[in-house]
Amino acid sequence: MKIKKILSNFKPYFVEDKPVLIRLDANESPYDLPANFKEELIQELSKIEINRYPDAFIRDLRKKISDKEGVSEDSIIFGNGSDEFIYMLYTALEKGAKVAYPEPGFSMYRIVGSIFEMRLFPYYLNKLDYSVDKKNLENVLKEEIDLIFLGNPNNPTGNIFPEEYLEMVLSNKNTIVVSDEAYYSYSKKTFMKYLENYDNLLVMRSFSKVGFASIRLGYMMGNSRLINKLNMIRSPYNINSFTQKIALLYFKHENFFKSKIEEIIYERERLFKFFKNNNIFAIPSESNFITFRIEVPGFYQYLLDRGIRIKDLSHSFNMTNYYRVTVGTELENDSFMESVKDFLSENNI
Ligand SMILES: Cc1ncc(COP(=O)(O)O)c(C=O)c1O
Image (cartoon, rainbow, N blue to C red; front, side, top):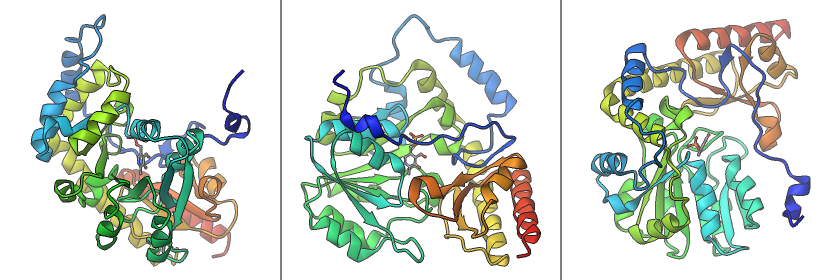
């Protein structure tokens, strides 16, 4: 079989699937849709003609996002999760193109990049506080990079990409620059305003982190010529009819979802204070998760045994003793903090 050689010894994206009560590992929102919205949803979904393909042009959603973001309809592309844009971008690039991404950063940049046989140039974050290291970034940019991802905010560190470095990254017009803003609703910081002057910038957003992870929807905005190239690659009906309808519900009740986002931000700060008060190193976060360090072994399993799943960063990122916790509901966060305290006291810390 002519299967790619790289797949014979491959470490794919890791998904922990042990069932637990408290899931704080995947940066989802802890809030399901309220019952009355679900009723409304069922009404809307019952209007779908199941035998028909979805709207290939995603018209209603496109119009909504174009109005909201103040960009033309032809400068928006939709993906089956923002993940799909990573595949589209790599498909569009010549084999062996040079791709840069933060390390640690979202693992799919690297995983998909290696499948597509890209030349990978991680820019390592500062080892002490995990901020972007200007020297490392400059060194990588000297390589005439074809595509660079900016974590804005970055996963798993939760911090934003410093705006003062942006023009340096954008200055090479041949470099496609992706501002990955999957967590934008929590940071409220965006590089959208640079779209006007830079044709090489793309701004990527996701519905997954604001309560809609199940529908798999992302959108990306940029210069219409570049977006058009990516649209040639996109499979024609990639956004199914259910997803298109459900996403419209988000906009209809946007104020409700925004209030949930504010609750999560409040809880994030409460968690951060907890880490600080207990002398646990944690990276200040502008997203819906916090990465922290506990040096005593056995912490991940201890939480799992109590029905709490977080993300152990030692596997994916070589960050031994680091963990990422998604901000949950007040009750979930209380259980998490209680368990951390118990773990520390059982280990005499
Ligand atoms: C930084 C970042 N970008 C993109 C994604 C992909 O999100 P989705 O495919 O669910 O839209 C994630 C998911 O965790 C992420 O953390």
